[in-house]
Image 1: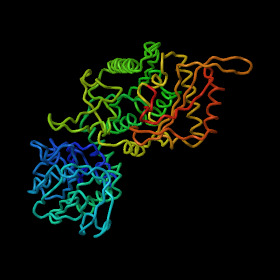
Image 2: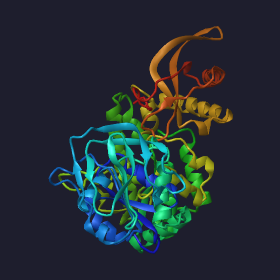
Image 3: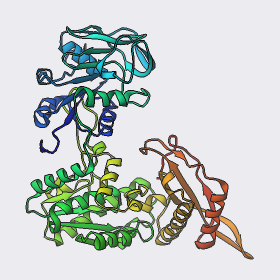
Image 4: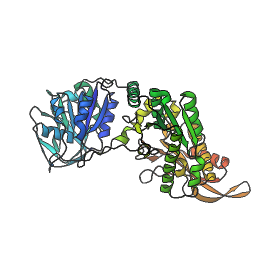
Length: 520
């Protein structure tokens, strides 16, 4: 990563907190570039990035335990502002000559801070004598301050809840400002970055784009790159970015497994070939995939068959091209940063993209991952920057195994066609009602159940179609979408009238948890 592209960077040292990613979110929301580095490699990260400020994260560890993690001394020797959060506050105190003890009252959840003194960090936000809600999660606590620090705010169980050394621009808080349950937390982090560290909030997507393009050129040189294009937002944005960097050195391969939505493959191919002049191979492998899947009912077996066939097909196509040195992937930041291990060194590993797991090793390729510093919404912003239409950027997530996992029980070509038609009608009705952007994900499921119906004067014995729609932020939890009955009635009538093979429609009102979003 070049330092010239990010002269104003914040380094976040990760001690293993589950919410470290949220710190990065808040920094970026303030328009400043940051990176998370595990504590084991924080010194190297500090030297590489030369940040203007450092934030120390929380941790499940205890500072009083032997061998517990510490911040590299170079950070305190550098003279730049440091903000310690929870464990970050405790290790900062210990390293600078203070004291931390365990065994005091633990504090978890909502707490209230009493502001005792004015402080540059909350200037213009909080004033002396005011009271503010924060979110606590700690067992240990600071019991003696290092020289130069003073208490600026307290809570009932944390007499050192907010401490400051204004001269050195060191600040420590026992609570978590990065979580939404601390209402002013994002502003505190913004104040630290802008007011204390003096960093301008001018990091933008166009700056990121220029940096990423240069980084790809430096990495690839004159070698060939292949990219597995699934038609999803992540792989599409990655492909466009790589194409901007190396042009004709990139070949994209779209393996059409016959399990995509109606006209999906054709639309993706048309968009990329016509609008972006991208070298794209459309491989129709539907016979191969569906041939092996026919009659298979176990969901895990379905996924394994699809994964194996994808790799085999992709590998064959790459060989026809004469191979490649690099594989482009749409890996995102949440896939890259995983929890930090305290015993066996860093466990920061990259999660393979669901479609191409195992490919790079097998084909002796290096990975090009231009999105690995971005969150999902940032990828969408970059897609916009690259000229992708809103209708494409805002698309609902679609699983790699496609319609195979929306067809519980044995798969047949006939069932897939019935499902494809029903799904297309359902999404059409959602769009007509202006609800597409309000829903996180919506789809039809073809159930392995047949029921008796009547059409005209005749008896029918056909499949049941279940409709699913959920609202969510990140897919980890989800609530079913509360349609009005008029909409559901309209969608059901169209599906039954227009799709031969379905005579009954039901709506899934299960939230996640206890259910999952997909049925399989």
